Length: 436
Image (tube, rainbow, N blue to C red; front, top):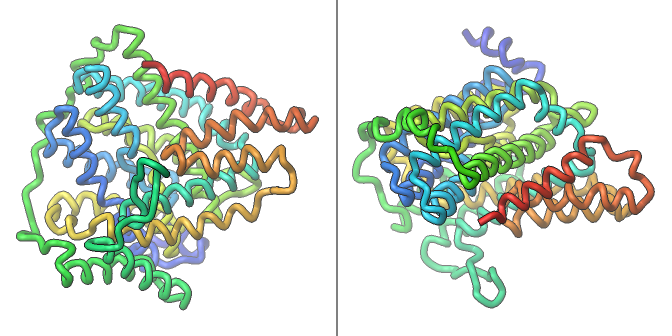
């Protein structure tokens, strides 16, 4: 059994071990387990049954993770994407007053289109055409983005009317973040194996002991019924019969497309998977998340995509698809132990996200900063992701600037043809996002 697993996932060739891959998969799951609770809360505001969304989130995430691990053999996990779920609930359902059933049908149609362009390898060609400098910028930008998520979730930074953000209140549960950050930094600097996971474990214990994290009253609970949302998308496909709803479908498609593309490139850079500026088996990775998105719409959740929190598992040594499979298995297990997962709060995962952000930001060293035609679009990507709170928006800023700066530097012939196409696509993308 052990030999077959080692052979199938290429454990030895990747210079890793089954034990390390399992730890990485569990670390990734711990880092993104919050989506099991955040997604039902957000989609619940749109009128969806929170229990059904909880189960749909777990099933869609598990399916995507297993497909990514078995087909693409990458340590990259999938789940309903943050940001696009908020667009689903607050912009589409509440803002546009579109029933959640119709919005879910929109996700279903977008997923079908997603699979179509993946089969024709359009997504793969786009990812391969991105210049190496911009790929490094994407990885670094994602690093700053997830570090910002960690700082915000941990309470170290907070909103401010005058300056937008400011130092958070160093009190209450924020001390769980501070404790975890100090412990994790020490473990990382002293090269302790599994430092990030150990840091989260000790943070949880610290939080419970100090009373900042409540002790769960029960450990095992039943799985909520999927009936309120399952298959609803099928019944409402015919409701997509107006320009407004076509725009909604295109937005689901474009945001998920570029969000996932950016995430895959960034994680591939972090894990050292790139070869000759190309991501091997990227087509299988893309079909995995496309299929998960389609299944998710049927189960009853917003678009599924690759998760930046996979970087936590990669940081502890995850290099094979076994990492993703373990993460998927943990999502299934998580459905039975939902009360216990409540111990892993945002203050517990914050240090891991901050540290991983530091590791991914190192990719900035690979960018040719002495050439402004490269530096400007790279900087827009890096700064745009955290400042707009969107990987896709950060990509848009950089990809629009890149052809302009290269032409201005009389290097227009060096720009891949698809990058010129992406220039116009991203202009359309930004226009669609601003259509009321």
